[in-house]
Image (cartoon, rainbow, N blue to C red; front, top):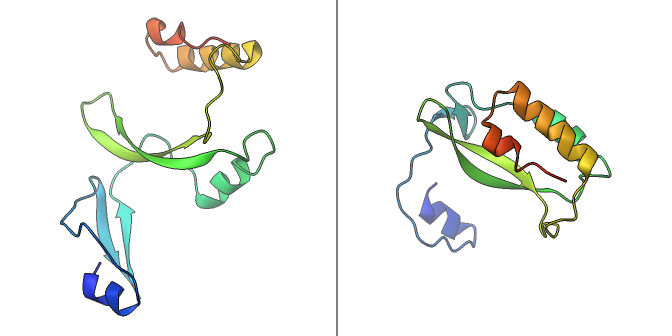
Length: 119
């Protein structure tokens, strides 16, 4: 982004520096946008994300950008939806934990990780 153009709009950008977003490229149409250049961890459309996180049990979750390490040694940016205030330890849901363990085993995650998914 152009710091001078932002200032002309009354904004005050700070810490202006160069940056690079791995696995994305600049695409130009009427305006510019970043677009992924390869498959990621899991993709959902914006409409699918809106649908998923509009359900009452998860409506309070908020997206946070993270960098995920992949099995091939590379890393990719992703969004992780988290509660602003995490639940206390030990206040879990045993049925949900069992379902997560089943998914983790299907994905062949390490048993040491699966064992930590307790409710």
